Image (tube, helix red, strand yellow):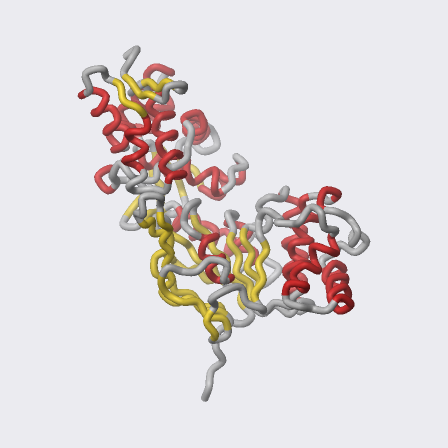
Length: 430
């Protein structure tokens, strides 16, 4: 008995980007993935986990460094008819009308003018933009512009829709409306699409939409876990089964391989990708956790909702609190440690001392910078010296971000000083 090929298949896909000094940076590491007909698959992971890169590889927009992608059994070596993608940034041509933007994909595959216009108008009507065919993108709201993006993708009658955080640039109500409209089209079979893969930074959104969710690890990106979502539709975000899956996802995303993320300083080096977290936001979160109703311990989904924190905003703070020993996470809950409570109870000067001690003990890059400054006769060093070291481990952009982060932490804790104009680190004034 012959079995139909899956819609989309990725086999041991890896991606390495070359840095200017030709040192390869592994972004994705041996990913295996299959999309079957009738599936909606969500992809979640922290920033830098390679989610969008993987989606572009599936679309044929970016070649893998190793491995292969196939669509209905045929290799994907470039963008293929049958696979369409919707981007976060709308990606519309401002000089074209709504109709012109939607027709563009059909023109690219050689559809004749009359047929092109007919199909474009149908797609515009389907996605709820009838009456705006002659409007330009500047005349449209964000939600309407994203509807144009969906119409442009759907007009080519794709088997597969690849969605790269398509709702994240929209306000909550607009995103919910557009998401529900898309699900209605899918459930009612008013679109020919047979499979959807979407990247999201919103855990509740993923649980609401997907049949299964892939959890990506970072540095490099790997599929760490797969969570089935066996819930009937419509799904109630307040139901116990829904909340249970949300808790599962939070637990996986906040727990690193082999234990708590950032729990052991000896497991990281100076090239560790430090979380992008400012001191004031860290202090604010610690204060919030100590107050009612949390009293030092909080359910992460509840914390995110009550404090209006997105995953991308919350997780770097959580990672940093764990890295510095101020909190630990387990089973979807975060709890302040004794050190975290001491910090919360301290005055400003004592907080600086506690923060400095934690940074020097738990962040090798900060300790390395302080050691170099201590050993130099003038106790000064250009930041470029440390940037070059970081670029042995990270991309140029990430190296700059990590160095800026540790400089911010070090200046606050008075571990070292930094002159912005000369870009020199020093021990002056200490």
